[in-house]
Amino acid sequence: MRLGVAGLGTVAQGLFMLLSENADRVARQLGRPISIARVASRTPRPHIDTLGAKFSTDLDSLLGDDVDIVVELIGGIEDANHLISKAIELRKPVVTANKAVLSQFGNTYISRARECQVPLGFEASVAGGIPIVAVLKDGLAGNSIDSIAGILNGTCNFVLTQMDMHDSTFESALQEAQDLGFAESDPSFDIDGIDAAQKLSILGSIAFDQPIDLNNIYVEGITNVELDDLHYARELGYRVKHIAIARVFDASVEMRVHPALVSENDLLSLIDGVDNAITVAANGVESLLLKGPGAGSRPTASAVLSDIIEIAKGKSSLPTNNTSTRSASPISDLSCEYYLYIPVADEPGVMATLAEVMGNHLISMEAVIQKSDAVRQTGDYRWVPVVLLTDRVKESVLDATIEDLQGISAVHGDIRRIRVVDFN
Image 1 (cartoon, rainbow, N blue to C red):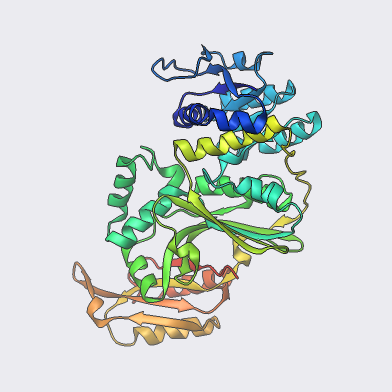
Image 2: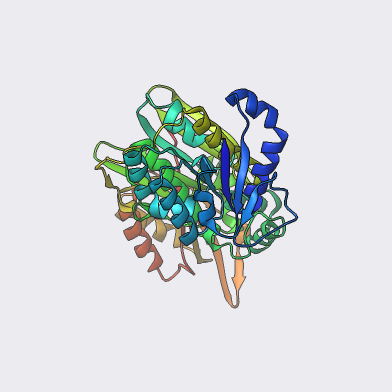
């Protein structure tokens, strides 16, 4: 089985190492070896051992008769899209780890792959070494999947973990992530939630037979989460995590990515550092939890190699039909509990005013934290944070409530909200 590999980055290097180290095991499983016939990359890197493959800077060199499977590991959009599209048209199986190109062109790839009867493997595009695509597509093929939820971005999880466990500021935790290679020099793709949303769009497509569409996902990053929020969440019995959630209803599907309060009794609250974790609720198995490294050379290469082996065995199933006509549920329709952080003047009667506004919108408060020793000074202004945990309320109602609360003269600064997730 001859591979044509596009790219010489960390994932490609991990693939070369795994193929070398596990060559005997792979050959025993397939009854024949897997070899690298060709490698193409925009930049030659002669110090990398490509296991005897022919090298070219021309991506189209991977489309010849001496390549059985095209493995796209170059990242980016334009070149990757060209290679994947052309390979499918030539009826060559494709394996990719590229969530960005899948989130933009995945519907076209899936449609053409089905028409051409060509395997398309993209296990490595979501959650690194966690085999979530295989679980949804094959392992749970006989189930009706109700929801998917989890931690899908290791950078966000690392930053929040450092803030939570070590009282690091957001800026210092992000810098540490960059220093350790867990975050890019421009980390906005991760910390703004786009990376997690792209992954969720792929998982939602498989789970709910719907087209990949980032426009259907509410996206919020972690840049507005403060140390105070993590401390108060702990007092309330929660931890703050960056969560991706997809839930299906009769006629609609809800997909959202945002910071959330997760109960300390939930296993997802224990996932720290750069690890990812995903829960799946389905009518045949009730609930599954998968946890593991969400990125990195070897974990991602492991997922790539699993797709290659399945295709080589002739067992790879075609992607989903994407025929669902469910509409997207807007975030304004969400109903959940909320954490509110309200900075107010340190003066009598403020709490009564806040309670009156909440009552006017028929919102009950499950918990209130107001500490006399938490008074802050900004210039000549003395203020104190009031933290509220609401009962379940519709997001659109909370929007109107926050607008009214923000108009109170004693409220000093912006009110922060964090949604509370209930995986039941």
